[in-house]
Picture (tube, rainbow, N blue to C red):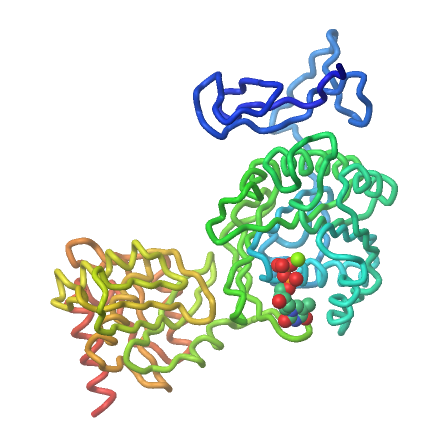
Length: 456
Ligand code: TYD
Ligand code: MG
């Protein structure tokens, strides 16, 4: 019988089995066995696996003070928002994981970046396991405008890992995009493309090949809404940088953020708009979102922080009588559990009950807000919708931010002065926030009084 070339290792306890089992005999956990290649023996194919020799001279550790740091020249992608989120451009030889749900624009973004890099004289390689070369050409034709030389990018429509590795070794490009990591596979592993074992193998072999060739690699990965699949999540520890591309497919706005970045901050966010000719950077997102705000009952402008950058977004609420028990709580761009908390505090500490009404909350423009500073704006939007009273006008919507405490108090959040400055920039100076009001009751009073003053 032929020697097996792979085994199944428990990700929990490290127990190894020849066959896949649902339950690990080592620790009793279910579904933790993942297929891996066995360390290279006579079976060829695994380059530079580097087994440890028995008599290796002990390397000498270097004191940090004596470590030499070199300023790395970053590769600019020609897309300002992307470069900023990366921390100033791509680092040569680094591995970047770009995650996002299907259809969000990952291929478009990487296509544009590659077109710009090609125009700047960098050698590029676009590997696609998802689309044929013809399909990629059609997309890239739409991206060819301005400085973007999208049709100069060499493509490889290939799904077999060995072939892709050979190409990277032969071409040694400055930048390589793998679209997507879930479509490549190593035929030696029995798992289907996209399974945890395959994805890990593909990513780690590409990483080794790329480091050897000095190639910066962008791995594209699909993440479902739940972010659960055997996908990018299992690679987070391996890569230098994890970028998440978010938004609703049907909406025009998309945000790009860094969840992990070994070469820069994780608090930067890029905002894009999907247009006919590809993605367009939104340089002043606040202006867009405030300009679109309705100022009708249920509309409040939230002064949010997106990383180190203040951002004004419109929060809308709708409260309508429900026939359902329990009634609906629907959120887009805001956490559902957080809404439950806001509604409970509104009912208990401000006398605004929503127990028999459906409540819908929407952060406009496909933006997702997951900071506690959004509580107060959501509370005000729900109160305004519930009473049917507008808190501002179309020209001058009400701005707000702050966290809600369980006892009905307002709690301060990070960077109040930056948020206020941004609001003032758009003429929304008299914002309702924890620095001005102490409790939700006072905040509501101030918000509705401001409206009466405007109406008078
Ligand atoms: P795509 O980049 O293929 O998404 P992903 O790789 O993340 O799955 O494209 C996303 C959507 O964008 C697709 O529905 C078509 C649309 N699109 C435009 O609106 N304009 C364009 O110029 C391009 C290239 C795509
Ligand atoms: Mg794609």
